[in-house]
Image 1 (spheres, rainbow, N blue to C red):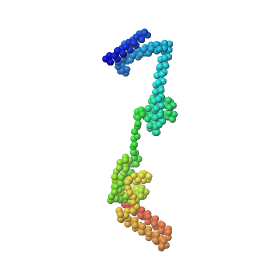
Image 2 (cartoon, helix red, strand yellow; image 1 turned 180 degrees about the vertical axis):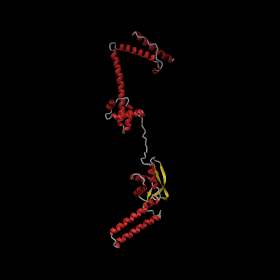
Image 3 (cartoon, rainbow, N blue to C red; image 1 turned 30 degrees about the vertical axis):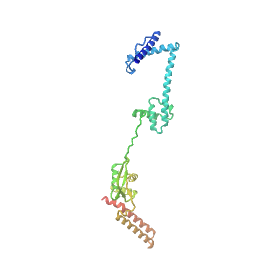
Image 4 (tube, helix red, strand yellow; image 1 turned 45 degrees about the vertical axis):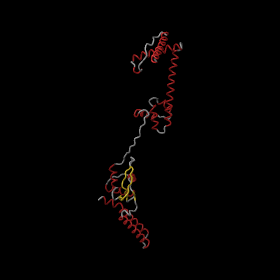
Length: 307
């Protein structure tokens, strides 16, 4: 019942419209478009476009008989003004987002939304600090990644060290002439990927500077081109190990040897002060003793391991 009433109302509205068109000597509307406009044939679109123009024209002549053209122009201008007002509102909102962004990556995403819709001069009038370079980068971002899309930051770990040089140094510092294994304990080694690896706790018999000097001397004798000194120190800093000044309780042979050097140094001091050898002689002998101790502690092990 309701459906038939709606059909009757539609027919009545068309009949009234056709009566008006007949009074203006215009052909009536014989049918209504029942399919979507984008699916209609070109001939059908031309018919309904022509019929709509006739109806609008006679309606405007009825409203303003002497100014129908001016009224039509005013309607078109009003439509353009409404659309321009809407565009300005949206552009103002996007510019506000661009201004509130805290980094260039976000600004690039915001400007890529507007880059192909607004010319550079118009966009620069809204964003005074926008350069031609940034405008072109925004258009490039639009083509590569899409309008306003977020580009995930890719973190890559680059290795600038030759693997063979790094392996050579690691082999050197893990040798028995540099480190000694502890009978207990572990240390945690954290990688660049945030992964943690547990390794046995080891101690180094020398401080990092002495190890670097020993390694450089070793490479010079072996005609091997090592890494730079700063790189060697960074590798030692990353590698997990302990440094002990005294090995008493872990290596009694080394501890007794260190004690022997201390006893000899005390004898030299006594000879210099009590038996008149002199201060200069005492300092010279102590320096030679320290060099011998350092050689036996580190360089001798390195030289012996190369044979």
